[in-house]
Length: 107
Image 1 (tube, rainbow, N blue to C red):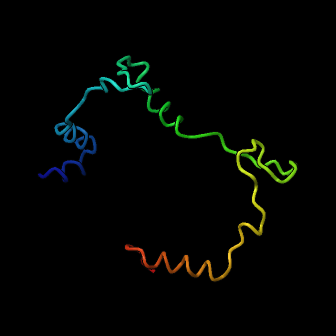
Image 2: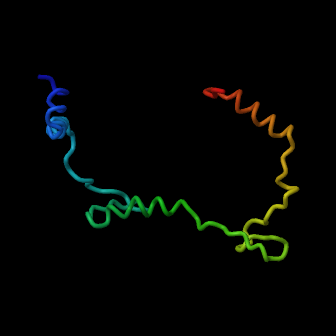
Image 3: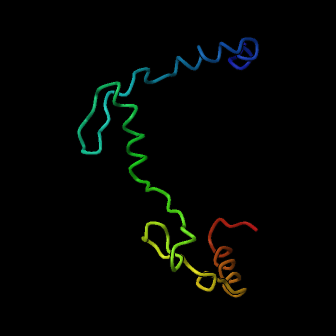
């Protein structure tokens, strides 16, 4: 019987079959930290990708609605009024036309 038939009869056969083709059963030998230093301690390695992921994000900015002038709570970016973010019907139609002209768009 073929492999598919054996797997249908015994689902555990799939794992033994797949294991034959496994290329690397080992663990990650080392990763580089943020300073470029290779780390090999198995207790440090799982934390390195998380540290890198977290390093590219900043804290979310929350609007302080009671602040004078409608500025954000950390004063980095002033809040915008409705007039500053208003879109006309022409703006929307032009944006839709740009999307339709892009390769891969299907309507």
